Structure formats: C-alpha cells, structure tokens
Image 1 (spheres, rainbow, N blue to C red):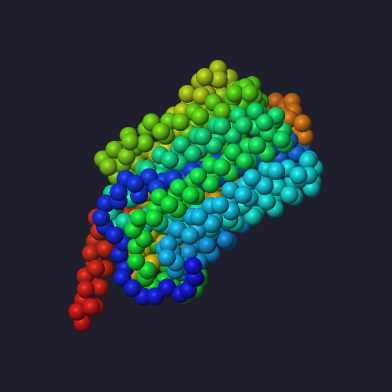
Image 2 (cartoon, rainbow, N blue to C red):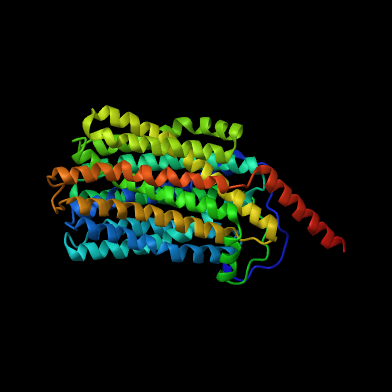
Length: 467
C-alpha cells in the first residue's frame, strides 16, 4: 500500500445496481461505527463520575477533548485515503488495519490499571485519544465508499438503508448489552473491563466483515484531487448543499449524544430503576429502528429525502421535549415516549447519511475531481465532535445542578441535581435538534439538479475528448 498524489483519470463511479452481498458486506462496518459511537457516549461519563470519582465537569472535559481531536485528524485521514494506492483499493486497507487497532485500544481504554483517582482519569483520557485517532482512519474511508461504489441516486439510499439497519442492530446490541456485561462482570472497574472486551469483539467483527464483504464492490475510478488541504476545504465551502447538511447533522448529533449521555443517570435518579432502567431506555431508543426502517425508506421515496429528514427531526425533537414529564409519570410512559424518539432517530440517521453521498457526487460532477475523502473527513469530524460535545454538555448541566460524584457507585443526589439530570436528557436535546432543522430550507440538491449537473459534466468531458 502506498500513498501518492492522485493522477488524472476518468471521473464517474459505477452506475449498475449493487448486489445484496455487497450491500450487506458494506453494512457490516456499522457494527464497528455503532459500537464505538455508542458505548463511550453511554458509559464513559458515568464510569468516570461514579466509578473513578472524577468531578462531573472534569469528566465531561476528559470525554470531550480526545474526540475534539478528531476535528483535526479526520480531514487528514480523508486526504490520506484519497491518495492511497493499493491492490485492495484506496479505502479497504483502512477498514482492516484501522478497525483492528480501534478494537485493541477500546479494550485498553476500560482496562483500569490505576484504580480510581487522577492517574486513572489521565489513563482513560490518553487511551481515548489514541482510540479516537485509530477510529478516524477506519470511519472516514468507510463513509467515503458509497459515493464511489455507485452513481445511482436511489441505489445510495438503498445502500444507506442497509447500513442504518445494521447500525441500529449494533447500537442496540452494544448499548443495551454493555450495561448488562458491566453488571455481570461484578460492576465497577472489573465489570467495565469485561465490557471493554465485549465491545472490542463487536468492532473486530465489523472491521473484518466490511473488509472481506466489500472485496467485490466497485471502487470507482481515481481522479485528480486538489493538491492541498486548504484548496480542498475551499471546494467544500463552495458546496452549499453539503455545508447546510453538515451543519444540521452536527448540531443534531450534539442533541442525540446529550440524550445518550443521560440514559444511565435518568434510569438511576429519575426512574429509580438502576438495574434494568439503562437497558430498557436504550432498547426503546434504538429498537424501533429495526422495525421502521422499511417504512422510512417508503416515506423517502414518496416525499423526498429532505422532507423525510425534516419529518424525522420533528418527531425526534418533539419526543425529547415530551420527556420532561418523565419524573412525574410511571416509567412505562417514559419508555413509550423514548420509543417514539427512536422512530425519529432512525429516520434522521438514514436520510442524513443518504444525502451525504449525493453532495459528494454533486461536487464530483461540478469539478471532475475525486474528493470523497475530504468531504467525509469533515463529515465524520463534525459527527465525532458532536458526539463528544453532547456528553460534555450533559456533564456541564450536571455540574451546574450540583451532581455529586463517587468512586463506589451512584451517590444520592439533591432535588436540584435530579432536575439537572432530567433537563439535560429532555429539554436540552429538544432545543438542539428542532430549531436547526429550519436550515434545511436552504438545501436545494434535488435528484433533478444532481442529474442535470452530471449530464452537463459528461457532455463537457465528451467535447474535450472530441477536440
């Protein structure tokens, strides 16, 4: 495998339908992205505050900084993968080596060799930073692949539907089972060690599955790329559909991550169900995706991806706002509301990720240059930063409300702290997810516009060859 400047070549990706085996193989990579994207946001903050005795504000900072690093490293990973030449293609080597590195480092992150205290907190921060770096070199090439696997607008939606379905399974299994593994392993630091090994195994399956499952996938054709990162970023800024979609998705990711960070706290202190509450809440949040994904696919086909994304976002934010009543109703009501939120979350994920390859294809049609890695590098950097900022924001709410940390399990909390636990889980996510959806009024990349630009580009290329 070598990394070298791309050479000028043909521009388009294949336009034939993908096989079911290729779709399934690609989708398996979501076992890795789902596990890594879920478990730290769900368990790392309470691991620090309730097992290592780290103050909520500092714990939030320790969760935020390593993933904030991805804002810098993800675009670099995208640019490197754009310039990679290997017998496996530009992206697939990173699925294998990056994915396996993530698995090993994730297990080490929860190994807890220093017990509790400042040394343990520093160890977690460094391990998390290394894991996030390895993850950038898996995730960015992985997300870049759909734009190069097919030029077909509808085929990308089908591919993303497969991916989000597996993603939902990965999130459900990792997020619902991880707390059970912690309890089965004895709780505390020992239980988290076993949980780290369990999640690492899921990541290995995802890395190997996506690497071998895409061996027959079209890889597109290498084209000329912008020579510098500054030039590439300038191209991104000129792609208005991408900048609008990225802004909406990042802000909504912050809201989703804020809610995710509060699951265990709400189960412990609001629902008073510390044993089964985290698993039930999380299952209600993710489980509906497995049932409604075909429905969302039909909705998208009928009303278009943009309108479907708006509908899903409204459902997600409205449900989050309704959870303000969770402290005064039976737990089953909170579970039902969380299930409705899960329906919205499923649609928000599938349509945002289906619109991303459209933006990349639009850029390729306008410029004649292959830059999928740059776009997806910025996308994943924004997503990762949002998923990190969510727990940081939730930790800030806990700190301001007077949450008491402990090194021996969840401590008793004041009424003010319990209110902070609830509002960080409901009102804050609703305010993040809902209003930013209005920006989608500026998203104007329709199938007709994309097809028109691609035809114009193809005609221009033919004229150039003729002359």
